Image (cartoon, rainbow, N blue to C red; front, side):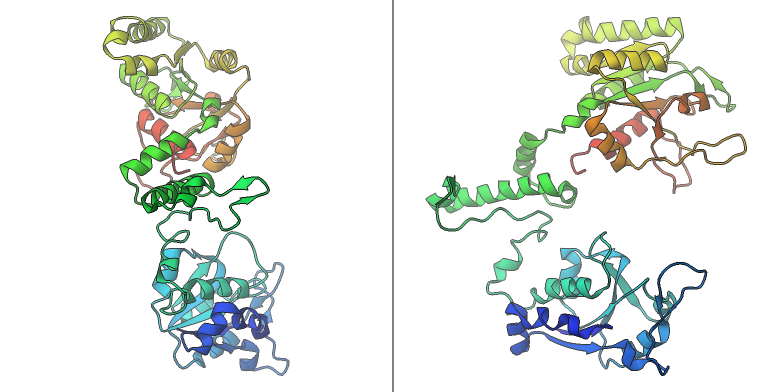
Length: 434
């Protein structure tokens, strides 16, 4: 693998690329590195490589010409890669893909980045190593070099070293221990001392799953898990802040077909399904909001049948779910119910398939991202407010402290039934891989 590095600071790489395994690999011809400094390809007497941005703003932008000429000077370029915050994330899978190339050209940005026309002139792939802002692309280039170089044949001392490590199977690696067996009253796990390879393998798998669950649960969605793996993860799953969340299913005030505020009818299916959804995700209560007396009687009869009557005897699972359901005449009464259950006044979180607009059609406030609402739930009591019919009326939305984003704002069709929207929103907030 030959790396061609386009950088304003070639000296930055002097120590890292002449140390440890990379130095040995370079000596044996497994890898090679050369540098191309855009300052050597400038066409002005001051060797200037940057200029102020069009449209104003802070910082300087790297000019196209010196970068372009430096890249064109490379005889065998291979894949062209720009290290930039506006790139796809560097993953183990991407490192494995790039490691198969014979040549890689790494273009290191500086200042405010490259003139965008560089990407239009050359087939450059943009790659980022994370969401932290760096002074330049050199650190990122070094990370990519190490991630791909170590996958070259002969680079690592043992082939398995590259396959058992973190991210190789979309799981973090298990913990490691070495001598002494006891250090400051901390002992090496007994299973590792016994030497039973089957037990060690099982322990390492469980520890790998546990590490991933604790620190990178998002990776679990990509990992191939056996039933045994899932059963182990189930023993760890204690999403405690789910108990801080309650649901309000609002039937008044909601938008009707003519876009006016009114009252919708309670449906048996909504109550059953949303109760089951709430129970599945560990939600503390479902507040069914309706001011209509005969609807309240219907709901009470339904809840009583499934929690205390014959329904409870024939279907205990349904009884457990319906036990979460409570009646409220309006949102204020729902808040009072929640406060009695949790001891804390809830923050109302609105849901809507559309942005909240004022009378002039302007967006009144920005929606709060799902991760931010999940963080809010860890320290606060939340009441997620769902509207039936065509969604919550403006007077209901105004009572909410903030709004969640629409679920399918990029799609042309955005009319999910309230049961589906409830399940999707809870999974985004509380899903196993979040």
